[in-house]
Amino acid sequence: MAARSVIALVSVAEVVAGDLADHLERRGHDVRAARQPWEAESLLSAKGIDVVVVGDSLSQAEGRDLLRRYG
Image (tube, rainbow, N blue to C red; front, side):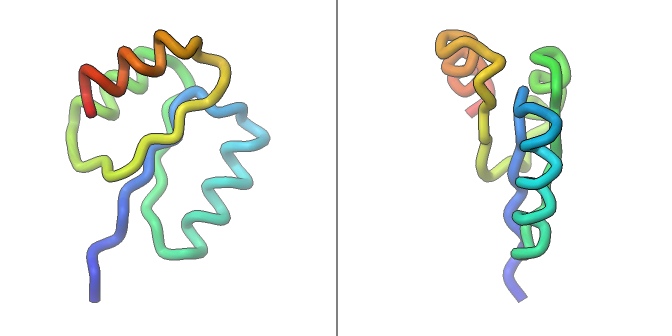
C-alpha cells in the first residue's frame, strides 16, 4: 500500500478547513492544520509535508515567504 500524502492547511478559515480536511481524509490523505503563522512555521519545519494549502488570511507575501523557507 502506498504511503499517505500529508497535506498541511495553513491559515485556512475554520469552516472551510473542517470540510476540506474531512474530504481529503476520506480520500486517504493525512491532514494537519495550522491556524496561525507561528503554528505553520512549527508544522512545516518538522518536515514530512507533501502539499501545503495556504488560506487567504495570510497575505501573498507571507504565504510565499513560508513556502520559500520551508518548501
